[in-house]
Length: 130
Image (cartoon, rainbow, N blue to C red):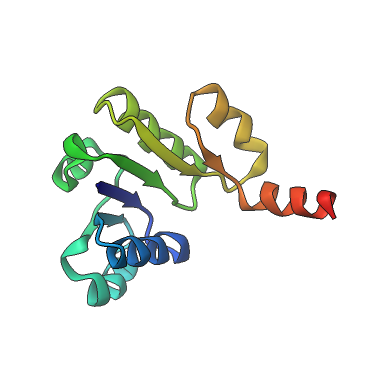
């Protein structure tokens, strides 16, 4: 399975690390050059520098053959755009998006970006369950 992960924050970096340890082929894309250099020291060729909202960056990462695209940046608009492009332009069947602001969850759902994962919503559900 080939996975593209966008966003090398804690979630993206740890997810990349875990998938690589499970023998999955992963490309992690990061737009912040300082963060990219830090992550690149560990992940080497599995990380690429660039803004994944630009088509050429996704194409350089091999989105045409991606089985799964995961957008976990700190920006909901970027996550929506990346997942929409993956699904509609590159016909990637499986996408996962991080929702930073729970108020945006409905926008992801309306645009067919599922699953959309909101840590805030998950914690609120756990609190309500308790």
